[in-house]
Length: 366
Image 1 (spheres, one colour):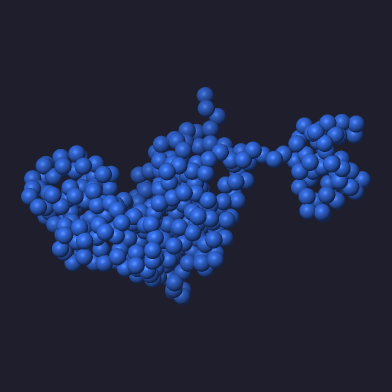
Image 2 (image 1 turned 30 degrees about the vertical axis):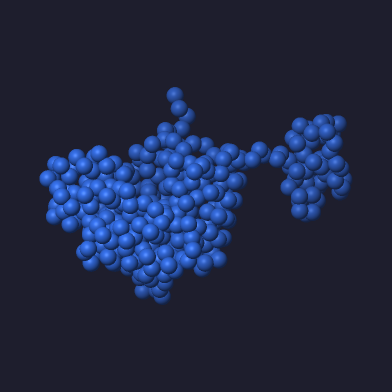
């Protein structure tokens, strides 16, 4: 019988140290951009309208109130901003780090039911410049972590404009969005057949899954659908790219992830070292304008590979006084629990470089 629930895992040293070091480094990076750390409760009131409500862990409080474990940060921060910070001075730059829980995630690397995220939210400005700020900060965070990556940009508003030109109802468009975002062209073709979409409109929708590349694909995208909504989305993307200057950003104009959640530019980062996105985010101008992104720490660790082997004890201290002295000198000192005659053998076994004894450090030779 398993000793912990499926989709959870123990995190042991030195992985824990590496994960915490990454978290701290990323939040320090965010701080250099003016983002201030914040935390939200792990327990929330259950909301059936929450974007992840069907996948959340639900609990019953002692008074019968239905609660849920935190499943993502953006909605929780949105509640806080609307209730307590809405009258504050904008823009707000917030960062967060912590655990999240989802009831039905697949139990594999990066898809645990309990997992960690680090991220930011920029509240107030709604412009290509604001999105460029987030993109540059996201790239800097992954560079700081030391991982190879490729940033991809999209705009679900463009996808929606092309799909809406078919004249289909919103329920049908939701199915089309999922197929487009998943690059599932056979499924997309079958859906179009079901709803008798043909001719140029059909060809435009099918073309969405192939609109992938650099800025050179923008003219091709503009030829698909000439509505104001589509043109506005492409203009926004083009201006954002221009603000960033020369870069290796890629456009995925079929990106339509979580359309009901995002309203503007969306982006994600992939790495050849892992088959899952390391980072994802976008714009959600509903009520107070906002945008942000989150980095999955477990995914980032997976891309970086196995953690280094624990170096063992730096200093083995013969007694409490020696341990205090060694720490006062800036060393990491572990206390020995063995007879004095066995100190050297114990130091070798523990991998210590030094033995602290009687106010001095004695080298431990192999």
